[in-house]
Length: 94
Image (cartoon, rainbow, N blue to C red):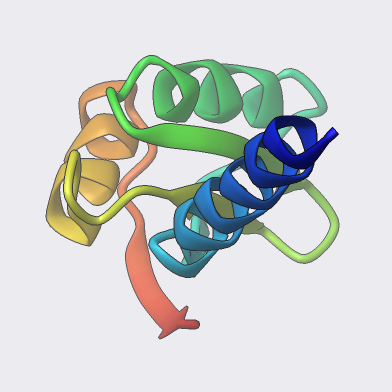
């Protein structure tokens, strides 16, 4: 029983450490002009190693990306959207 408690505690500590290492960035992606554009931007962002999730909103022309800063950078994210034909800029990093 004691070993199960230690295992669970270790897993919880690992999850907390992983969550602490994740950052979120909001990108302005102003060149999106149709309903398909956000799909292209999202797929480009999701291909970047270290990206956990990417949500792109056509209406606000913004992307919110959760990423591991040990594996990627905001520069790599903006490069990925630009390479897909949609230049972006960092609005805010959380």
